[in-house]
Length: 227
Image 1 (cartoon, rainbow, N blue to C red):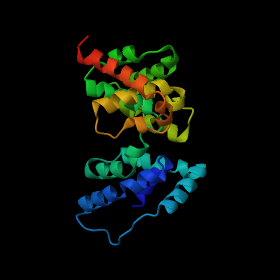
Image 2 (tube, helix red, strand yellow; image 1 turned 135 degrees about the vertical axis):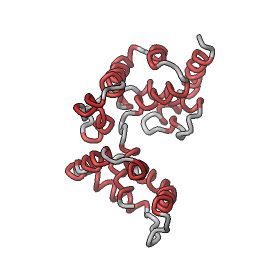
Image 3 (cartoon, rainbow, N blue to C red; image 1 turned 45 degrees about the vertical axis):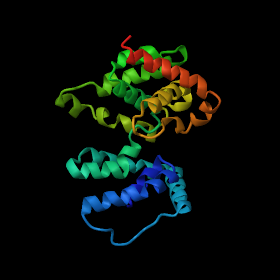
Image 4 (cartoon, one colour; image 1 turned 120 degrees about the vertical axis):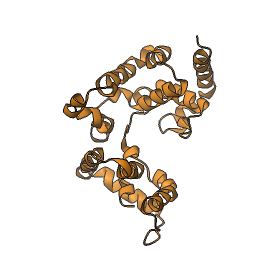
């Protein structure tokens, strides 16, 4: 339960509050017993913890130890820690990257082709950054390469500690890209929630919904038709 509060370093208190029942189910499934006591988190208390963690840089820095430890875990221990905090910290501030990868997977299309279709002069820096990430960190490497390159495993946490890292894919720097990818993902139904409600684009999309719906339809039709 304490580990679950670590996600407040990157997430709002509401997301943890909504996930609490799921966290308790994971606890029972893992330990095969009920918690020793019942705890229902108070939203105001969670907000206070979040503000405390995010306002103190030295406390935020300690999460690096947890994340490095997570990288050494395997099997059930790794799955549990991923559910508790790691997956809420991975790719922090990188919606453009995660949405592009998700859309590419759902369409079962080549990444290069998806990038070509969404390319726009205002998105060059963001797309170049994504290509850089893929080439440097995500392409298959030998075990020796991965052992030498810790960045191949830790890059996804970079923006927790330094917002200047991969700044071009920060949502407010490439809002058009995130908006169109979120609309496409929502139409394709990836099962990960409604991406159009992502903070930073929900308001932007309010007055532009029809435009992005049409763009998403054209995009999906292009790939579904095999053009």
